[in-house]
Length: 135
Image (cartoon, rainbow, N blue to C red; front, top):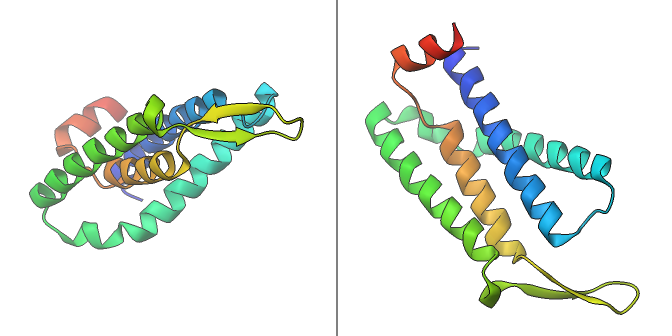
């Protein structure tokens, strides 16, 4: 594997892990911190694998076009992820004990995380910058 791809996968994993942790913590899907961490790691790895295959045609574009597309996709992804937490888009779910909870909008949050993962996996830094940071 090229160093740039390893750098992109590591960067995407860290960002996706933190965003999944935020999503799961805020929506109270899981109560125990250890399962929260494992769930976030699993979803991050699954997202990266899926985005590598789906975004593969982006790798055939020139680097300049791919970077512009990646910047636009990352902006749209973060915007959709932020909109999922807005009060107007919150979803109300009932638990087993008839208590209701407001959780982020599933469609906006998952689609936003997916778009952001595709954009960070296919954004190329100039050769000098990632070689300096890695080595």
